[in-house]
Amino acid sequence: MKKIFYFLIAATLLIVGCENSDNIPVVEDGVIQIEVLHPSATRATETSFENGDVIGLHATEYSGDFAAPLQISGNWANNVATTFDGASWTPAKKIFWSENRMDVYGYYPYMTPTSIDGHHWSVQLDQSITETAGALSGYEASDFLWAKAESASKDDGSVRLQFKHICSKLVIKLVKGETFEGEFLDNTVVYLHSTVPTASINFEKGIISKDIYGETAPIKARRVSNDTFEVILIPQSIHSRLPFVEIEMNGIAYMTYDLFSYLPGVQYNVSITLNSSPDQIEVEVGGSVDNWE
Image (cartoon, rainbow, N blue to C red):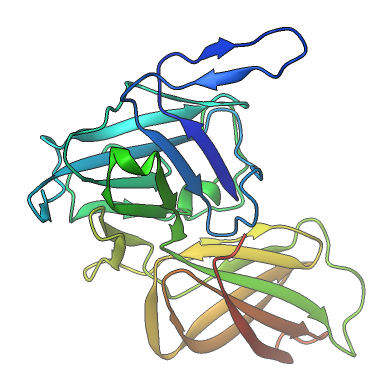
């Protein structure tokens, strides 16, 4: 899932048509219409969602000027799973408009929260694992997205959810130094060190907080090209010079050491120059990017 989708929350779409005219979908009266945009979306027609992707939706109702707080249950809509079939999105059940205003929440990937403000969660330690028919890839399962539309009313006609990345991302580009010989082989492996992979999610505020009692663990990056790897991680700060990125190649382990601060929703770009000796490594931190693709 990368960019944007648009769907109508309804159990049935009635198609009205006539000769020499386009088919027009008709939304069931009172059913909420949702427009959802991925952080990297540029056009309302773009989509790179895949068959089987599932998002979760919550909705709370206003009383006067205030919306009810989001809870595990008892909301206007409770964690409604909505699945993409390659062409359209189908909710597990219909969500109707209230006569009052509403706050609508969305998140991806779908899960079963045990707490609204402290659900235990972890990025995957092996993000090189590819997608299967029954599971997301290690990378995709680590990319938590969240959105909220406030004070939505049926007079608005639809609810627009602008998703954003909640985790951090590190892109690692390998560069050949003057004394490096050969190529970056297919068995090249890259690890990110010294970060805590566990956290708690606040679904109401869209915040992920590092587990203060969590232990650091290496995260295996996914390879996106011959010389580029990427990792999604929990936002956190590394305040002392610790093992940073490790590259295993041709039976040689290249280890870098550094300190780093990872902010939520930000992609960081790092270039690592390798030479024939594991001790001759240069690390260059490039610019950062919000709302990566």
